[in-house]
Image (cartoon, rainbow, N blue to C red):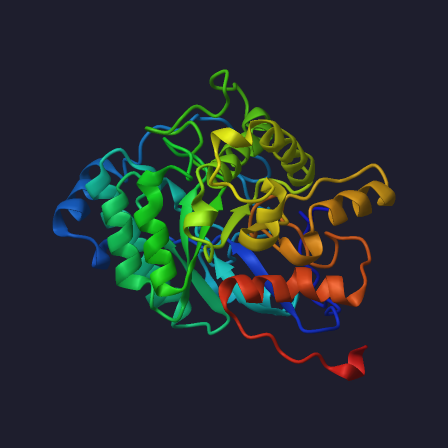
Amino acid sequence: MSLIEATPKKTKQRKGIGVIDSDIHHTFQDIKQLFPYLPRKYRERIELWGPSLGGGPGTLNGGSIGKRADSFPPNGGPAGSDLDFMVEQLLNPFDIRYGILTGEFIAATNTADTYYSAALCSAFNDYTIEHWLEKEPRFRGSIYLPIHDVAASVREIERLGSHPGMVQAYVPSGSPHPYGNKMYHPIYEACLKHGINFTMHVGAIGDGMNAPATNVGYPSYYIEYRAARTQAYMAHMASFVFEGVFEIFPELQVAFIEGGVFWVAPYLWRLDQDWKALREQTPWVKKKPSEYLLTNMYIGSQPIEETPNRQTFDTLFEAMHAKERLLFCSDYPHWDFDSPKLVFPKMDKETTDNVFYNNAARYYGLPIPMPDRTEE
């Protein structure tokens, strides 16, 4: 289902209302492009020491240093750093009506020096606004939060949460605590105040001050880290439910991006079963955990599991309420990019429009156009 080869110059557009791509990784050509937005002391620090973003697991990725081989701009620079090339290779061929920029700088949210982390997040946010959102009306941005500093995260939401181009607060799946912990409540209050949602993206698990990637420690290879992604999301999902976040903040919407899809249904079945047996421990949880999926949670489509047959796909797709809660994500320009033309088997028109457009429009507060009846 992944498309690693070059995008054809001529691509037949999918009929309908277009596509909202909820996961596009943009970046800068050189970190010095952030200097106009950084205090002098951090500019000097980077010039002398480099970015110094902290230690990661050091495992290899896939593709060409983690990217599609054809996604590097012809004029040079990292994949995802050239706006015009991205428009030509992604937005135009696939009828992307809105592209949600999620960046390639998630390490900035996680740096042990929380003042430095806050400065980097603010700088990247401002860079995104000036160099991407103000130049291409189809793009929307994500507010990077220095998640180890809740107060600084709230200040960043207060600073940018009402910006019309910024549509979500954005954090990595790697964290020192599950996101249902009450220490994060001020962030959710700020999100609701400004009408934006809270989105987690896979990343930073086992990095810096964050918890290890698995309950048994650190894996040796990237493929193991990749397999462990769902563990972090399972922990966050259970935490949101059982620590009562969705009862305290019933309007809060959260999304789990790039952690797979079909684990959601059987995991929620397990939570439902355990909740029935242990509900006296968390009496504030008023309904089955699976019901919160339909009221408070969305799932990103990438990377969707390849099932052994269509029947299995349809069963799991229906079981996790994909028609109502799945957001299409291409993950461009990463090596496991999912093409809108290839990622799903043929679906009915209502499901197709929901998954490719309407669900994301509801989540991000984007317009839902009237369908063109001539295309039906």
